[in-house]
Length: 61
Image 1 (tube, one colour):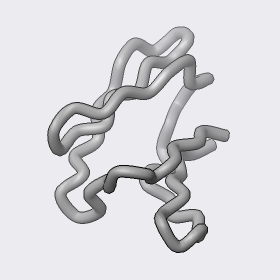
Image 2 (cartoon, rainbow, N blue to C red; image 1 turned 90 degrees about the vertical axis):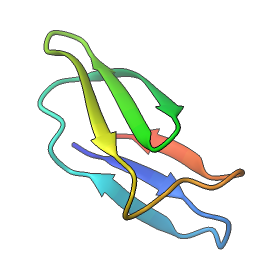
Image 3 (cartoon, rainbow, N blue to C red; image 1 turned 180 degrees about the vertical axis):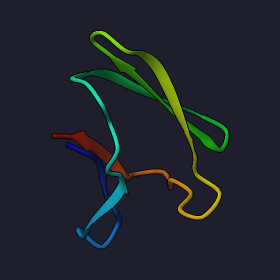
Image 4 (cartoon, rainbow, N blue to C red; image 1 turned 135 degrees about the vertical axis):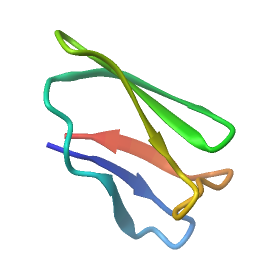
């Protein structure tokens, strides 16, 4: 499982590979990506190294 983004060049980029449970939703605020899971609560990932840009698409698998 992981979280990916589709950048403005139509390339998939893995943001995180360590999601321990089924992802229910994601949200972005400033430089953090929040991930709500079915049984493990909410996690956050700092996006300092790979900031999201307007137009990026987020996908979780």
